[in-house]
Every structure is written in structure tokens, then in C-alpha cells.
Image 1 (cartoon, one colour):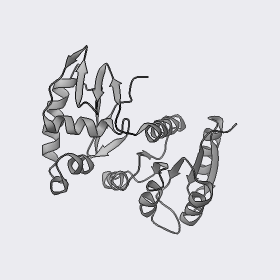
Image 2 (cartoon, one colour):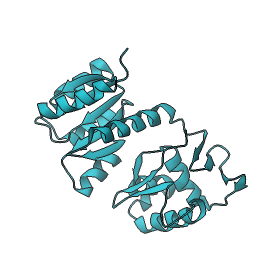
Image 3 (tube, one colour):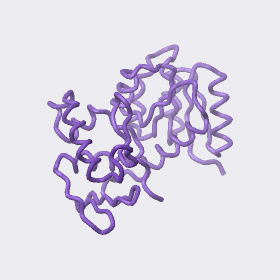
Length: 228
């Protein structure tokens, strides 16, 4: 029996074939689309669990599709040759779960796809999770290690909670600032950096080599995957 349905959107047939082969080996059901029109048709007809989206499409700017796909609830990985940080931030701000730059390793794509699918399935945002031995209980607003409470400031807990609602997913500076400080602060990246530094000091075993809160340079932060 096949697994979740994945739409692969890319105008290069060779890329579609490469991704199809890797996805089918991993027992996914693959639907191909070579244009924005075909991608939107596949979203309507096939109702996929996830989409792998190239931004360089022949009939429409790929970034325009990101919010349209994201609002369906499907996990969305952008796979693009565009390396500019601004492109990555734009895709993530518009709702993409992750961004992979071409040329890519298919094992990495599969790992990020699994992560995005897990996050979509379990993203109720109300439970407790454990990461590197750190226990985060969003409902009780409690953070503990080895049975001991860790005291966080409201902003530190706010940043950690927002990341914990999307484990494994990159959240941009603007997304975190809007969520924790408010829309008027989305360009005050220094506020976030100071708070993240203080948070790491309290929750990381070695703040100089963080394993819980990962930095995506010039883009934002990502919480490590929860312990299994």
C-alpha cells in the first residue's frame, strides 16, 4: 500500500524523475506537475499531503503558489536553485515548511519531508515535548530538566513556545518577532537575538554549541526534532 500523496512541481523532467524515484522507493504516491496550472489542478483533484515546489515555473512565479498551497494544510518544501537569503525568507514567511537549495541530496529531501509531515500531523501546539532531555510543557507553561524547573522570562518562553509549536521547522526572524513581540516589532531582529542568546544560556548544555535551538544564518531559528 502506498503512503502519503506528494505532488512534485518542477518544469525540468529530469528533476521530476529523480524525485519520483526517491519518493517511490520510500513508498510515497507521486503526482507530477510541470507548471503552476498543473500544480493547482493537482491540489484540487488529488488533495496531497505534501508538495515539493520549484520556484522557477514557466507560467507563474513560484512564490505566488506558496500561500495558496500552505492554506490547504499540505506540507510544503520549496526546492529551488535560488540561493538568495531573501528568497528563502520570502518562501518561509509565506508559509513554506522548509527550503532546499539545488543541487540537492535526495536523502536530505526525504528527511526534511518526513519532518514536515510529522510536524503537520502533531501540530496541535498543546502538548508536552522533550528535546535533548529538556521537557517543554506548553499548556502548563513549564520548562524542566532533570525534574528541575527552568525559570524563563516571558519573552524567552514566548520564543521557545513558538518554536516548540513547529519543531523541526525554520521560523524566520519576522515570524518570531510578530508572534512574540507583535507586528510593530518584526524588523527589530536585535530583540530576538538577545532573547535567543539568553534562552540558550538557560536551556542548552553548551550554549556555544547549541543542540536545541539551531540558527539558520540570516533567516531565523529552528527547534531540534523532539526525542522519540
